[in-house]
Each structure stands twice: as C-alpha cells, then as structure tokens.
Length: 112
Length: 114
Image 1 (spheres, chains in turn red, green):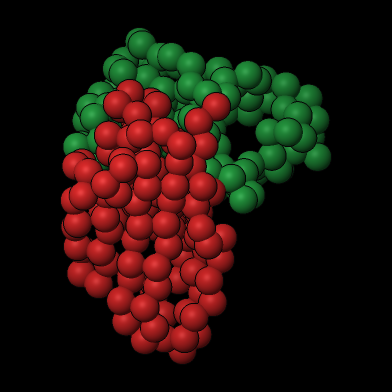
Image 2 (tube, chains in turn red, cyan):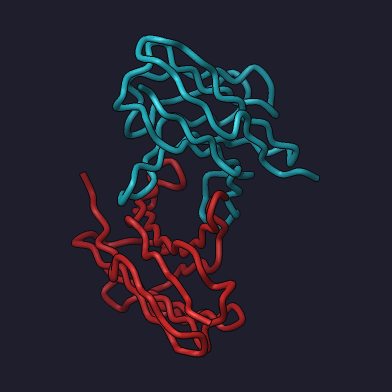
C-alpha cells in the first residue's frame, strides 16, 4: 500500500529551540494535513495545505506543501513545554478522508 | 458541545471475548470513521460511514463490524478478540469526506487482548 515516511521519529529539544520535521512519499498528494496528538488524547488538526508550494502558519507553527507534491514539512519556532506530543502528517490522494494516509508520527519532547 | 466521545477509555479482553466500542458525536456530521493506532505506525482506517444506514470497509476491516443506525452513533464491534487487535482505537467525524472540512477525533479507547 501507499506509504508516508515521516522523520525524525523522535526529538528531544530544549525550550526555545526551533523544530523541523517532514514527510515524504513516492506518491503525489492533493492535500497535506498536520495533526498533533497530546498524551491520552486524539489527534487535533493543526494545519491543512491544499496547493503545491503553499506556505501556511498557525501561530508558531509553519507548514509547507512541497513543490513536487510528494513532501511536506512542519516547523515549530521557539518551542515551549506544551508543544510536547506526537505530530502526524497525513496525505490525501484525492480520495478524501476515507483514503487518507498517515505518517508514523514524530514524538517531540521539550526540556524546560 | 462535547464533540466526539468514546467509551470505554481502557479495556482488557481475553482471547475470544467480544466487546463493543462506543462512539457518539453531537455535531450532526454525516461522516464517521474508526481508526486503529499501533505503536510506531500511522493511523489505519477500519470502517467508515457516510450517513445513517451506510457503512463501508476501510484498509483493515477484518475482525471488526460496525453499524450506523443514527447520525450520532457509530459503534465498533469485535466478535472474537485476538492479540493482534491490541491497539488504540479512535473514532472521528466530519461534515463531508473532503479534507477542506475538519475531521474531529475522539480521545481514544486503549484495548489490550491477552
């Protein structure tokens, strides 16, 4: 089946540092979604990207839809302790949510 | 407005037992979904529903059944639990299946089969 490669698998950073993570695939996607999952909770949508090259921000978070449509990255600036959690990317091949493909997640730990 | 709620939060089953995971949404969404999340893996779609009375298989439907008798409820049934079904299960809902409409997730049910 289709796969998304999400990296890094985990990160342990100091508070105040910037963070970057990305997802790549051999397939071309029409939509990229980025989610955050807090411990013991379900994923929450952070940013949605719909066009190649699109750059979208949500507070300290910035995500970009790669020009080739096969990748996307998420940056977090000036990390704070509440950024702790698992960040997932998901790609839509134009089948909608019932065909969404999820990455394995990047686990982020922030040291105060 | 509670969003998507799931019960129970945790459950331990013995091999061969059956159980129903409950999911309810109060947003009047047409679409509802069941996912499983295994350690180190992305979410996998088990079943989804496009409205009351209509369900369809996702990527990993074997060993599960669903029903959708109302707009609000979308229970997931495990008939003969197996250790391979140990996972965290998430229910989600959305107004349409298009990613331009936000998909909302419940808090999850952690199931262990021993």
